Length: 258
Image (cartoon, rainbow, N blue to C red; front, side, top):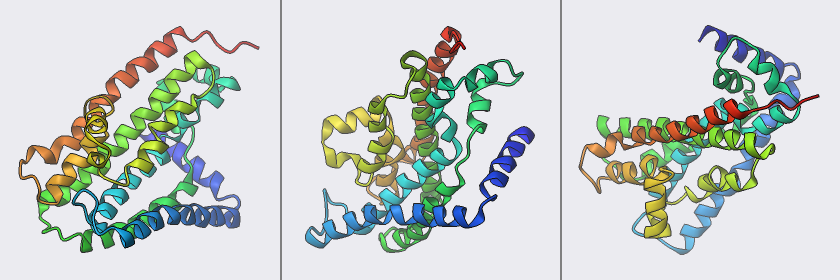
């Protein structure tokens, strides 16, 4: 943990070398996400509810999903750009260092400009919490915390999966964006909106619904089973196959050469 803090401090110092550029980039990242919320806003000007979910309830759902994604993107950015590390030979240097490869890739990159997006979500989330009509209790509040934590771990696992596939393709696969940016975009609405098959896929294969749809039902009071509180943490099982594929990729890696 001490070594990670040193990496973190180095990345922060590097980002602050050009303060004006950094804060302008921070502002730009915050403005990027405005159109996402405008899309939801204008849709609900025409329709009062979607599959029984009101505007504030959908806003709560989406802000939580965005926070999940941006936290994962902030901390696991190294895996998101891992194909470049393979291409320029940086991973070869990682292999000869006496540290775990996962840790080194994880600590290799921290994009502080992404905090602009996180800050906007942090501003909108309290509004959604206050207007969604939920009778808040400790169990419901901790469910939202688990949703953010579990979702961040799930998106991080998908980033690891993308990086592991780069061992076999030498370049990042654009199709993986369906499970990262695509999941973030479609996550603006509860997964049940897209039909039974999509909900099943997002429950048993890539468990986005465990960190979004099912715990949301508990928060809204539509489900009372306390098991729903801990479902977001159960989504962490997806880390296991992703890490296994990473280990297989590292074992079969033959170096980029000269």
